[in-house]
Image (cartoon, rainbow, N blue to C red; front, side, top):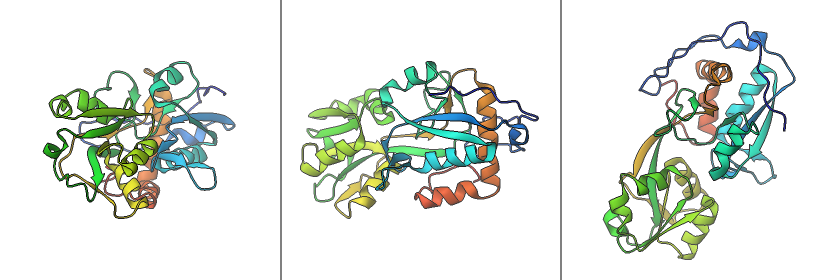
Length: 268
């Protein structure tokens, strides 16, 4: 895997990451002076639809990967889609195997661990249950078996602010990916699944009317693109291109394709 080489730029935009998602400044990205033939390697969870996953043709796709492809197309870079084990993402980034983590990556609580882009998705964690389970609130999860993905924001919530809620569960099972977790939910091995709302919406839509989300949110957060701490130059160039895509409507078009129009916060 080639490591991303620093690009010469003629003008690097200045963007302030403000507390509110959508408080961005926009300016021209540095694509005019970009060298061609460079690789941009994105680390992603290949089982995290609609942000990153393998489609029926065996190709990696998803909202974040399409955004990354457009960024590369505009800069003359070659996109390398690198599936990773989510719990190994920091090692992949620090070793230079990937240039960024771009796959529904939560910023909250990690602000000082990475160099972040502006937030681009407002996300929440929710519980998904079978529609006929009789579970209608978080209180009904007492004594139930609940699933969650390893090293996920939902797990962080259940081990943090929602630890009292988790203590009422009969079991809390950690899964390597949400596809496997949904299989267990279908088979009744677990009673509920704590999951990101965008992923929940995608999974429910693909499985018909058999599942519902509980109204109460487990936690709320924002997604950003995470770069190695201190890699401001690459962050600025990727971010600048992303904001150009917001200005010309490309970002909104890709979000609509994946059913995320209500979740994205850039351009609003």
